[in-house]
Image 1 (cartoon, helix red, strand yellow):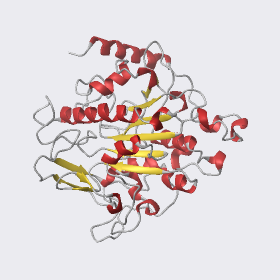
Image 2 (cartoon, rainbow, N blue to C red):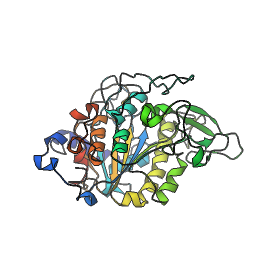
Image 3 (spheres, rainbow, N blue to C red):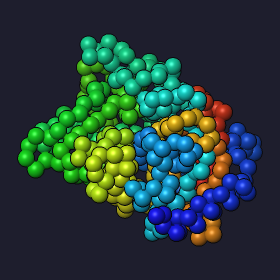
Image 4 (tube, one colour):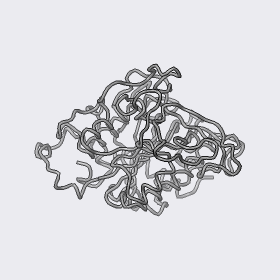
Length: 394
């Protein structure tokens, strides 16, 4: 039985759909000419640091005919995620979310092309989940272009890191390697920690599962480097995130990917918590637990408190690519739109990964007003400014 408060939220969402709560879509290109000559002296009022947490393979809402995978909204296996929407999380004043975030493009599947899209506004014709290089180090899905977000950030002297779970660790005991030994994680790998007592700190399983397909920067030659993998401190193991937050050593742009268990992609072999045997609900619960632990960790940091934003992002729609299959998308920030009627703000403006990318370009000022081109389909997209307080991102 669903929580009655959840039922009230469902009614509220239905009203949102009827009224078009959130107003008219806003394209960055629709701004007054005055904004094109804006100065950087308003930086203290704008978002400064971005943390993207990448999740997998579930819709927020979907037609009743889709039964697998299950949707996230009102799902008892996802209490934390639902608390972000229904106002019971304790951080409601810092939450806003989208109710019409849809697939980047019809047919844009499986995962990998969507991660590419979030970085470059296109999938480059890729329609698989291959690693960037073949096992013999010949090129597979690697792209030789600097027209992508992390390249723009580097050119503009802004920093980025890609925190990936189950990379740059000792795969026998889950202990991070010394930073001098970190390399670009070009190759997917999975298995079990073999040293007694070694477990994943979030789900307490011995299983590990890193997927390069969920690491957008490794698909671009200038940010991935050659094969065999070369040293890099821009791809820290996930354990490093807590240390970097504590030491105020995070980057301007931080991409965070849990492994394929903690991102809701796959179920642990034994299931999770009360959701046994392994099932889609156990996958959902694994990811919900991860977010419930990582979001507060980030929120406690100086980087977050000083105009930081956490973007909780899912990769693709399931069961169809229409507006009926809506992807979860949340922002957590002190710069989020104010609550409405005591609940976190939401809207029914149609967004996609192109909207996300356009907004990242605006936040970091690597957009046409600062000498950069829109990346791919970001040129056609509605930005996410409606989810933020005025003047937070542009």
